[in-house]
Image (tube, rainbow over all chains, first blue to last red):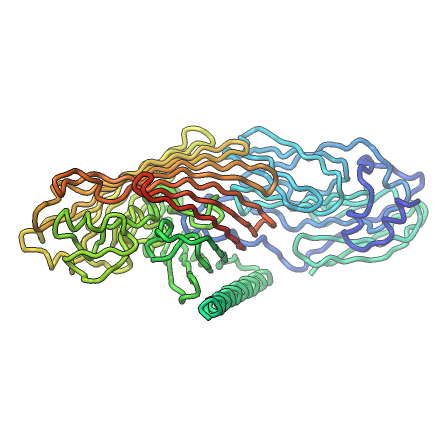
Length: 228
Length: 409
């Protein structure tokens, strides 16, 4: 009960920080449970900040991919009881490819191990100084990967020490009721018992939005967001 | 009273630095916002860096650079900008304000890739140096310590605008690079020349060809390594070149060379006729290596420079004056955001014969620097370091403690 109450007390992303660690990563569908689905529309085109001018370089900087910023994360600010049940954490891969983190936005549950794979021909040095997880993986070569387990909820900003234009976001949730939007902005959060929920959408740059909705037994609720 | 005035001056300078950072940030934010509302490609990019260094007294001027300022006592605001012109050209500029003494344009050049399918780049204007590796570590965070390598900063007693008449004159100024004076040329006390001036960039044109494992660059410019210039002061040009190879992942090896006339026209005009027509050049060679793996970063670099110095009376300088600087640098990350670093550095000089004996023409200098850095945020770095400096062996030594705060975005 206490765990659920913790999740109910907050708004926006702090829910991730207050909820307990080591929550279940696997889907736990509620019999007859409802779902929230919809689309996130990006009304403002947002591009990543340009890299710092390479004033001391002797020529054009090497080309690199620009991350897809038309990705958002939709999640419940308050999760139902049972969402925090502990399960062994899964493992996911965050690739480093063409001097870009792929994906640019990753959402995981606490207890998840993220493997940082280097698919480039150069060294990378992944690090983060974010409060939920400070780490520095050092420089490692092509084909190798190093892993980090995320046990505290929150937003972890990830960078490469060698390539200052590289960055990624890892959103660590204490519950499993979240979804990363697809190619057309679509999302779906399943396995929700009937109840009233506050649904939030997060984007790296655009302003977050929240909506309060009621999910009925076995019903699919459609909820769209527009980010400006 | 004097302390109060100094504090007031420092406060004013800190205010200027803070105001500058705020203004630059506002410009960058405004530009970000404007670009975000547009579907056009982003043309303009900014980088801002503020740096504040403080240290204990450096009475023997071990850390003073070609600008007559110390790397360990510096307030610096720099703003970098690049304006992209199409897909294959850009204008890059850097404005700098040191110690609140007024802004200057430290870089301004055009970068062009003439052929879309060839990795050939041309840069023209006030350009980054081709020679060596350290001088292109442009940002403060690229230097794990607070001091700079001796070869790139330490002032020798030699000058380009004031010349010794004899070897005796030269030896009289031994160890006095912070303020030297000679009888031929400009009759005032001024700072001497470093082997390579890393704080100032030369003006000219350069070309770079970059392949996967090899990079080759060459430049023609107005000044010399030790005295980069915006305007030519002697009708001579410097030619410099560099080859860089990357045989293994994490290993970079470089070799550089440069040659340029360094004596000013005014100083040359003060020479006897027979000495004026000779070439008085700085020739330099450099070798550098960088190796990194895991939490280690190791760098080593050597610079060997020779200046031909005209003398007009006995005892003559019968051969060019040589100087070599060598350093080894190591950085080890200890935990996220925290690193330790060290640099062992030496600057040596060739010998000349005067007073019936053979002596080095300037006083050899050695330095060991130990330091640590802590990143409070990704773009806020605090550094602390201690230096032990020796001049002329153990004849004179000085310990300096320094701290530095560095902020950028």
